[in-house]
Length: 290
Image (cartoon, rainbow, N blue to C red; front, side):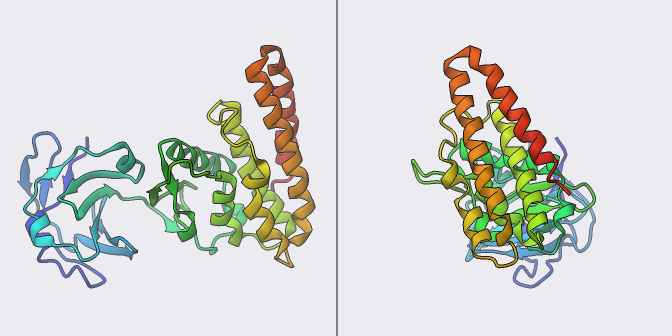
C-alpha cells in the first residue's frame, strides 16, 4: 500500500480556516506498523472545498486528501492514533483512515465537480456505466448518493467520473440511479438531440447493470418512478420539451426489458427473449448518441 504523508501535530499549526494550509515538515505514515519517517515538503495542504460536514484539503504530492469536520476539536482529535480500520460505508466514501472522530484521510480524486460547465459530448458512455455501477453497488449497501450537490468528480484527461459524498439511507428508502445521473449531468445539454443522447448513455449503463444481473428482478421495477425526475425536468423546460416523447417511449421499452428479465429469472427458456429485447433497445439507444 502506498505510504500516506501526514502529520498530526502540524495540522493544528496550519491556518486551516484560510484558503491554503501550510505544513513545513510532514511525516511519512505507513499503515504497516504506523512507522514515522521525516520528510520535507512545502505548501502541503491545499484547500479544496467546504461543505455541510467539513472542509477538505489535498495533501500535495500525494494521492490523498483530508477532511476536517466543522467545529472540530482538533486538539483532542490529534491525540488519537491513525486508525486504518474503516467500515464498508466509509470505503464507499473513499475514506482510507481516520484520526479521532473529526479527521478523515481519503483518496484524492483528480478532476472537477460537474456543475454544467462541460459539454454533453465530454461524457463517455463507458465512464457513465462505471459511475452508475458504483452508485448502484453503494445503494445495495445502504448508502445513498447525495446527488443534489452535483457530487460527481469529472477528470477531463481520462474521462473518469467518480461519485462522492454518500449518506446512509433510511431503511426501505427507494433509490433511482437513472434520475441520479440525469440530475448530475443534464445542465450539459443544450437541445432535445443532446438530451436524448445523454439519456441514451445513461440508459445503456442501466441496461448493462441489468444484463450482468447487478440489478435483479426486484431492483428497479417501477420505471415510472425511475424516470420521474427526468420527465419532470424535460417537461418543464421549453428548450428540452421536444424530447419528452422519446423519454416516454424509452420508459415503455425499459419496462418491456425489465418484464422479460423477470420472466427469465422464473423460466430459463425466457432468457433468449430477454437478451433479444435488450440488444434491440441497446441498438436503438446507440443510434441516438452524438
